[in-house]
Each structure stands twice: as C-alpha cells, then as structure tokens.
Length: 301
Image (tube, rainbow, N blue to C red; front, side, top):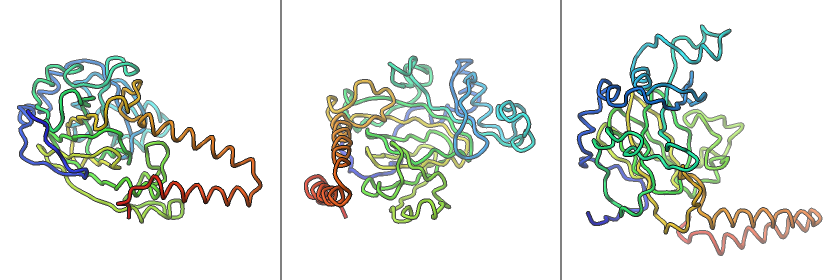
C-alpha cells in the first residue's frame, strides 16, 4: 500500500482493518497460543507501575484479566504488610526483543502465532518500521507521562484506555526527568511541588476496542487502562534513519543531533560557571534569547 500522510497532531482512527485479532484475542485464546513463554512484567499495588517480575505468558494473561487474585507477588515483597496489599495487584507487559540490548520488540518475532492475527495500519513505508510492542494491562493501571522520539500507532485490540496528551511545546511545565514527567498523579497533582503543571494544555480521548491512536513523535502521553486490555504499539521512523541512535532498541533515545546539542550546552554551562555571578547571569540570558530567536519554532505560542 502506498504511504498515506497523517497530520502532525494526535488523531483517533476508527474502523481500520486490524485483522482477526479483534475477534480472536480472548483470554482463553491468548493463554493457549502464548503458552508458557517466560516474560518480564511490571507488578504494582497501586496504579503506577513498580516491581519487575517474571511470569509465564499464559499466567500473566489470566492474572491480568481476573477480578480477584488468588496468588500475589506483592505479598512476597511486603511479607510484613500483606494485609495492605492482599486484595489488589496490577500487571503490565511491555514486550521486549529476545536480547533487549540488541533486538527491538516485534510481535511477529517474539509471538509469531499472535503476530499473524494483526494487520498494521500502513501509513508509513516498510523501511520506516522500527518496532511493534505487545502490551497487556490490568484494569486501573497507569503508564507515566512520557514522550517517544518516533511516530506511534497505539492499537487498542481489546479493552478500553483513557489517553491524556500534552503538546511538546508545553514540555517546560511537565517537570521532565529524561523522557518522563515527574508528575505521577496528573489528575490531582501536588501543586506545591509542581506549580506550573496546570499551564500544560491537556488533550484527552478514550480508546475503545478496535480504535487506533496516532501519537506523533515528541507528544507526551499518559495512559490509563480502564479495563483489562491488550494492545500493540507500532513505532516507525519519521526522520531519516541516520538521525537515530543505532544502539537504541527501545526507541526512546533522543535523535543523535539532539543528544549532541545537549552535550554542547552542558559544556557551555560549565564554561559560564567560570564567570562571576552577575556576568554569568547576563550571558546566560543572552544565550536564552539567542536560542529563542534561532531555534524555537515560529509557530510556537
């Protein structure tokens, strides 16, 4: 299929042909086809993910889908506080390559029987494909606010998710640590700690089973699973291949030029530190003005 162009803004796509996965991927089918393959998962007693454990794939699917758990990981970790955590435990799978240090995630490689059930929307050329990440989430689980450096189709095969997005131009209000926001509770943030957070423009949508969300590179997104859900993220390279770090298997390392620019900036700041305070303040402000004039998008508000 010829490449189709998407706007550089998030967009929910409905009614796409996603293959037989939308009808096949029941708990029973996934458990049977996925089998006992060992997978690394996140386990948490609260909405935000926490501990990493290993579990057979079929057991993960069954645990993530059940309303009441009979077995627990958290009780192993908090054996002296078992009553606190006994009745709830959340699970999250983000599939990895066979060797995560060298191989990207691709459902067609790690789960070939399931990969044959899904059809990827082809809004990109085959050579732009980077990865396809298989995801399974317990109801109520929340994925922290972050950005990716590649374009992304979030395919919601089963279940329902609430997605909150933030414009890349509002990064200054999100209190970033690397590619993630430090603000974990976006619905009730600690405004004493994060006073600028309300200034970030917020966009929300709900993905139902069979919906696909296009998330352009650099758009921040926070994902809450409102139901047990199974999905696949398809990442592709919006920029030429040489712009990306060749050692990046997760698709979350900044483009090579951006990383180099940050390194240069860090060296510049160390050099400024050699000046007395009033000089450092003056020349730092000149640098900020120069960046605003030369590097900021003219469309920025």
